[in-house]
Length: 117
Image 1: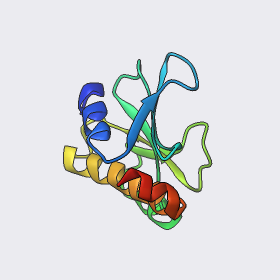
Image 2: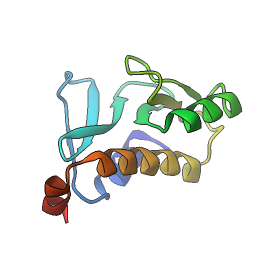
Image 3: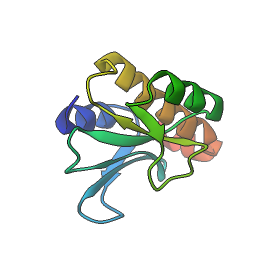
């Protein structure tokens, strides 16, 4: 996965916006004004932070120690930094993005969810 594939995939999800609230080097994707993915534009290989269920986060870090790390500059209990270094397939990477999106979407108030439909 490269940065354009990541961007296209994230923007294909309902209600997603993108921006640079932390400066020109960090692309942020939000649903309902809540962050579900961040990525540095210059990272090689591509890496991104995604939200994750705490138990699943630990399992993923143990299973893929060179690709799934505690979230860089994030709450390490709830966020992972994922390295797109070839160890995880495109499908696995999109599943991690989907999981993050769903966690954040499900945490939104009903009134905000209704505006996204």
